[in-house]
Image (cartoon, rainbow, N blue to C red; front, side, top):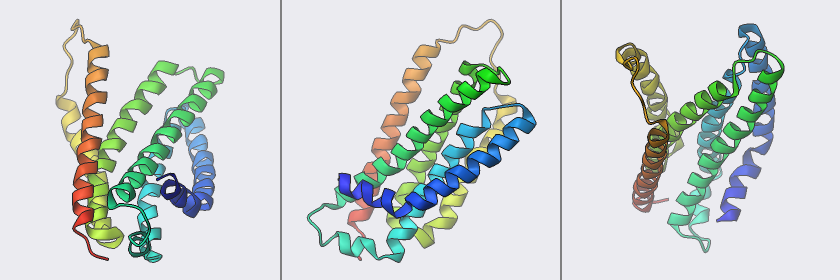
Length: 209
């Protein structure tokens, strides 16, 4: 399975490095303009989700799936490697860029490490859920057919947040058990990832190449 993960990384590494450098420069400039470091991890994590989807385009153009099924690997391993690659680059990028944003913030704007980390963590969870929705679509329909559906999966959470956020209110003086909330959210996210992987495996088994 390690070889399957490295295959995606090697196929996209030049694109990945260039896009990371370009986006880091762009959003560093935006951060300086708005006097905020919190945008950097958020936008670079979004780039990682897009990169994960690009790996399906590379596979499809190279007719990788048909070749992979002649190798001594199972369909479950192919799906699992794609999940590990997608989730891995998202979480690693989120962790590294959040640390960099916190360090830069300590030297400049002083937003606070907790504020930056909380924002990045919340967005990382949203992107993980989006990945869990998108990946089964790609395994079922392929890169070309799933592109429109994946765009909707990106847009719907933002529209839902935009319309519902004004109605979400936390009563003053309420004691929220944040530790329990975090544990619950992480547990739910793991459950969603597991369910998504199972669905992708079932869908990928039914495809013919």
